[in-house]
Image 1 (cartoon, one colour):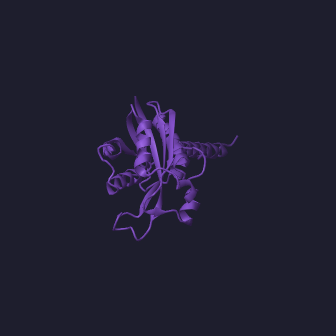
Image 2 (tube, helix red, strand yellow):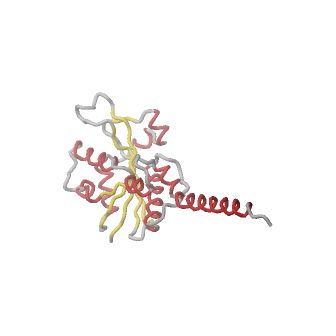
Image 3 (cartoon, rainbow, N blue to C red):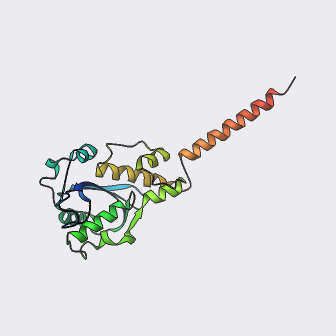
Length: 217
């Protein structure tokens, strides 16, 4: 079965003593959220896992931003086990991954390689052809050349965000709702179309009002 899977990760900051030595990156995954949609873009499953970092720590800023605490990750699986669990969840499906920007793909790939995780086993995550950047797709659709935030894209699509931002599963759900609406309405630009219609109607009304106002009986 072909499915579309939206992935969103949350990350912590890697401690300075590890950077450029044991682990050459600034961030490390602490949560993976994913939402599965069928070929008709109907949600048919969810996956969420905290991830215990090897080099990073959750500081006050990250805890405030994500709501994730040291207690949440204390007994969480490491990245390899979390990805193994996700592969089991995905078993039997032909998967296209969607993410908001390329960050999720890049970070997952970096950590698999830096931590010596079996790349053959993780081929599904590493194959760039399996991934689509919906931030780029939405930006083109709405005519916005900058890197749109998910919040802005939801506003343009006239979708009210649900839940707290920067929770992996919540952000994946909201991204899935955005993708479903846009893919089911491929010609619509939603808010922009409505505003343009209202503007045209207002201009027409003003023109008619001016015309009628100049008529003398």
